[in-house]
Image (cartoon, rainbow, N blue to C red; front, top):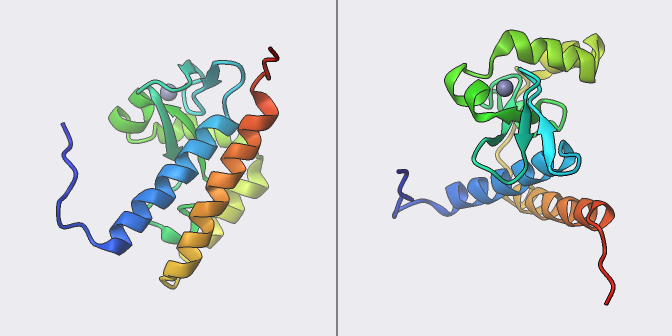
Length: 145
Ligand SMILES: [Zn+2]
């Protein structure tokens, strides 16, 4: 069990909030009906379960593309956590979904430097949240009484 750190800095809290909103958006984007397909192995992933991960193609340690929406896609728990993203399968999935040009663009920009900008982080967190809410409105059935 992972316990939340007690003395976490406000910057770290902001990063957690940003990742939460971004990952939620990506998982919802990649889900059709109740299921998504793992980009690495192709198996179905039920939305909203612990099997449902937003996994990076190029590792999140490359901060320039950590939040690039093409670099993060729905993955199953097994590929993301046990197979270290299942990179061979992920590459095949990336080529099918985006094509070679996007894969090349991500690889070229992965080493770019990024300045820490807390106000931009707050704006992006709100943007990811708003984008998620908008997608949810578009794709959830509306019930009428
Ligand atoms: Zn998988």
